[in-house]
Image 1 (tube, one colour):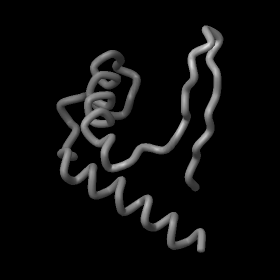
Image 2: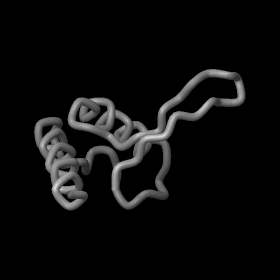
Image 3: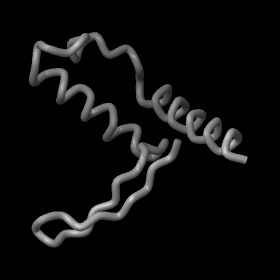
Image 4: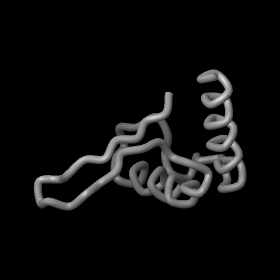
Length: 72
């Protein structure tokens, strides 16, 4: 399922909640590493991340295409 919802934050700033896309792969990967550095209560540590940026882009693109095909 794809999600896209504009909202207004408490400070009045506009924000859009949406699924990650292939163009978000670098930020997605960086966020994964950052969050896994900050706690020991996740299933993996940041150095155990085996997915590279290219693979992540491909996975996000394929996920979107799959959902679009199923939505028809």
